[in-house]
Length: 175
Image: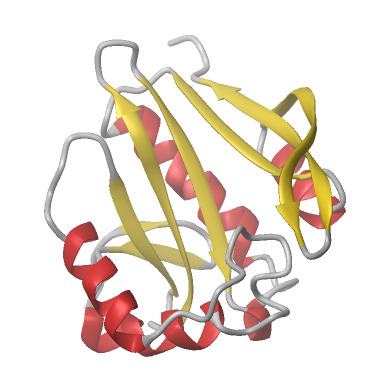
């Protein structure tokens, strides 16, 4: 069954605990997947279940998605957060499970998420950030049309040091 917003490799679908919860717990406790995320504490199944329950309640300020291949394999999560309808902007983020990284799913999911934000929600500006050391993420964001706007030095404490963060933005193209 085809549903959700499709790209060339992935489809963005609503969160489904039966399909996506176990991978969330697995990936959020995997050091390779969380290497560049702000997740340091172990995540229990109950914590993640409660998070899913909260995220599945429709709210104007967020749209969470699971990322699946076109064949239906779950490979990650993405979403829009802190949506500000008045200003028509939002923050965005993505995580692809370690076994599925470097296969083009991330860039395709970012492109689909961006298209959804501009076409379905009518947003005009998306903001996102990544650790400065995460060169793969920086490269992917640039390929997806995001532009660097600055570095926040020592923004987050992560794995033994304060880490710089690079801020990116993507504007809706003129009609």
